Length: 219
Image 1 (cartoon, rainbow, N blue to C red):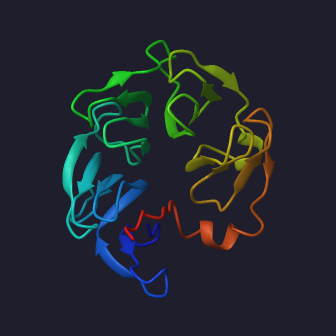
Image 2: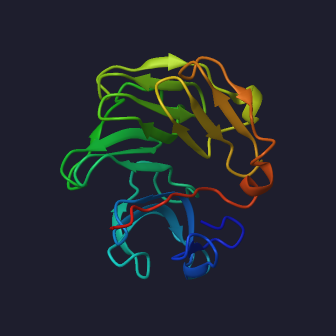
């Protein structure tokens, strides 16, 4: 995802060359396979850009179709949030609220219905079917029971200087969070309780990229 030109770029040779395939301002991309992928994005093929929604591709990103209109944040919101598929049926989305589907997106359930109205979630990451984190304009929250209950953790605002771009955990303790455009990467080694700046190595790249993923390749 190229954050400077509001486009999706694709490599089929392990990154040696890149090809522009679509005009979307993307906040999150999630490839399910080499052919199927989802993006949380704003359609910028026309000017001005459209509203934030989720799109699906079934041909390796060559074409995209509207999969889930973003009704959580409403119209006029630029970045839709974060999307993660655990398998073909179970997915989580942070787009103002936190919601999940167990039937491939046909229906969605609000996992945090009692959140304060001014609390907006932007990023979500699940390590497995039970353990996950969500970042917001307030605290980070963590669940260990698939969203039935949430524990409030510390927001790395002092490190990031603002809201989340994306979040990724290697295990229950080690994780990373990005600001999105500032080039700052915050790292935690205690499951999200404390954070520190760990962005010196990645800073030049994160000023240009808002999100990247590797798709599974069949062998």
